[in-house]
Image 1 (cartoon, rainbow, N blue to C red):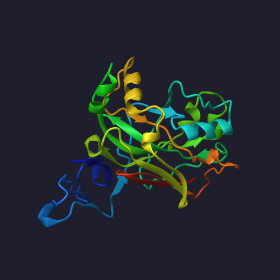
Image 2: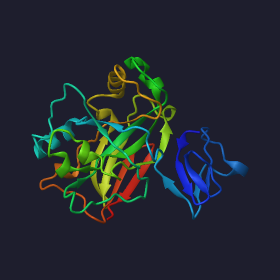
Image 3: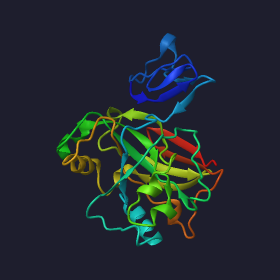
Image 4: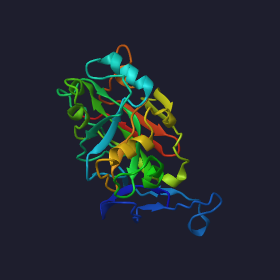
Amino acid sequence: MNTLIAESTPEMLQELGKIAAALEIFVNRDPGSSGPEGEDPTLRVGADARILSPIPCPLQDVICLGLNYTEHAEEAAAYSSEAFTSKDRYPVYFSKRVFRSPGDGDPIPAYEGLVDSLDYEAELAVIIGRDIKGVAPEEVPGCIFGYTILNDVSARNLQTRHTQWYLGKSLDGYTPMGPCIVTADEFSYPPKLRISSTVNGELRQNSTTDMLIFGLDRIISELSAGMTLRAATIISTGTPKGVGMGFDPPRFLKKGDAVTCAIEGIGTLTNRIGD
């Protein structure tokens, strides 16, 4: 199996990769192969099922990279030089608390009265496959289980109050992920994938994941040098240029807006701004 999802039905508990009566998945790596009784490999979702985030309730905070695309670092510094820096000598790490991760189609809370500058950030997220510590850069590819899409939703007014971004990144519902995890063996390493986002169908972000300032070898070996990265640790690698705060004037999200983050080979993650 090379694509993993989480599903929910009224009859069954939520769990990763479960094949339920209302949700049938046929996956085969051979391009010319077929599913049961000659059917094409496909995904069928019953009326009572919905696709969840592939990791709905992470056991630990998500580790995030800030300012990891050059042009995004520049647009962030232009928005608030006090809160953001475009210096790229060392990676910028921060964590993002996740009470529950929204999946594809789930709403993102607007938090009216608390948040007045809601923003989106399309990112490639890496899922660690086993407990690791002290990993050398050349060993990193063997430590990666797979990849998914993460929208690093951000409340800019809370984020820019100080140089610690934790609060503005960690409100409930601010870490949508999905639509699935694609295993690492499906991509060359390091993955060079088209990454983009749209708001109400308008293209906002458009780049490739090989444009990271700090690549996966550096990130994972540096983090694991002094801390244990447990299996299922999520590392979100940063976002390219084109977020709402990068426009003049800024173009923040409002209630009813639909945000779609897309990564080549993984799929699309769409969420609408709700109440």
